[in-house]
Image (cartoon, rainbow, N blue to C red; front, side, top):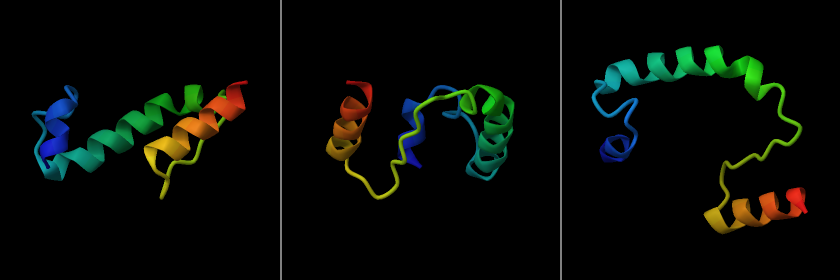
Length: 59
């Protein structure tokens, strides 16, 4: 998984530990994520589509 090299928190994790790590941190951050007034769903969207949606939501 070459992309994880760019992510310092997971760069040294074995692939089989990655899912557990992400799940744990999502759980720990849930309180803060639930406070968001804006949510952008990014699945199946290009970077340009995501940027456009964020700009529309913010302005």
